[in-house]
Image 1 (cartoon, rainbow, N blue to C red):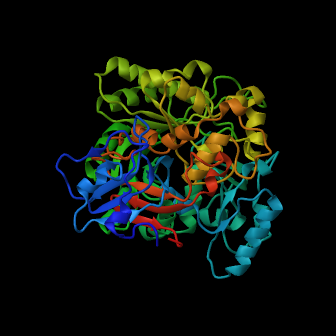
Image 2 (image 1 turned 30 degrees about the horizontal axis):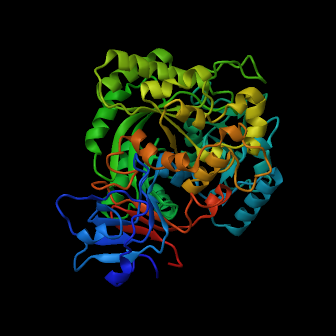
Image 3 (image 1 turned 90 degrees about the vertical axis):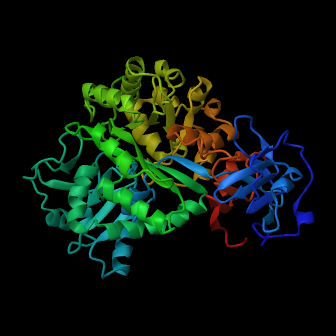
Length: 578
């Protein structure tokens, strides 16, 4: 084992400071519990410092500097590890994901393939191999496979008509079910729509449900009748996925909405995991608001007081403004190209939005939003601008997420208003879903401007990356290295023959993409004083990589292995070969 193995002090300390102009050390002269030396430590601090050594005491960093300077924090019991020149980065900070909801969705058979027949074959095989399962689950059904229409209950009835089948769409906002699932849930032609115009059951001409469900409220209306969405069920899924997050280098996650469980129940579950020492990531969550009849501000204030530990906290208000382009529920400033008469309403009416943002901001609550279309983006920017004008100054960290399309007039407003633009790196390519659904909905001119990460950064805005796992347009992907690679190349791995989204001029630097998944995401969360960069006084959250991302072909970044992940000074992942 090369890394994290104590070695002789003389061999461990390499006296070279070619990349580091000055050392940071704790003025209290702390003795480190652990020292990592002989590395390429990209701190991601404001100056872009590259260090050779780092010292850790407890859960904090006490030294960052060169191999000679680190001697000052080495004591008789310090464990000294030779990095062998390996790259070290801050632990990845996920600007937007759903670790609890993902554990609910990512069950059963993986259906992320580009063939309807292939999906049906996988479901058929899974059902045959699992004859005792009471419910047949699957996830990742790609929406672009149906040019005109969607999957029907009859297609799944042919596989199994005695057991319910429930298949999540790859976006997490739609589901495909068979007749038995609808029967058990009591859904028929007389069932009212769950949230008219937003969350509903697609229907045949006679009003009977066709087998396709749109948006979370209606989805859960069915799923909750098929399985007991209790704490034990969700926790089992969370425990299954947490080690995978650590293996991907994730140490902090911004949870944009707990689903399946009540919000308090979900935060308490994460708190319990943390207290048991079983939570390898920091989770900061939000009150998820998609019901305009509810006043969210006092609920956020209550949750902030109830859940406010180092590892688990509920700090913000997540506003769901619109849906997506596939269902014509995203809000755009110009009409849909293929359906000009589509006129979706905002999930939260604009007046209600403005009032809530004004009061939340006055209470020191930061807002984050699901804003898919450019009209939704503009509405939230307007609300934030109004709050800034009317409320006293404060350190605001509002975030607009997704924002795949931003009107050119609004690009500079992110920097001007101090609003973070957060989006998903793995979505920044001309994948088959975008090339069919999104191009049809919006046309090539708007698609060329999709995912304006570079434009917003150059205009002075803070840009952040978050996977939105498990939701996706084409591939559900939680690994930050895939997001970084795709944001840089504007092409998905394995699809380099496809022109980059927005042209080569839309590509961003490796440094900006890394920052977006570390310090910039931490800034959007209001946690940049704790995590996101490797500096003295911050938490000892870091990863060790098999290759230096700055030195390799950026198209291979996703192939780099995370050798070790450390969160709060504790190793949460190490690869099998180390």
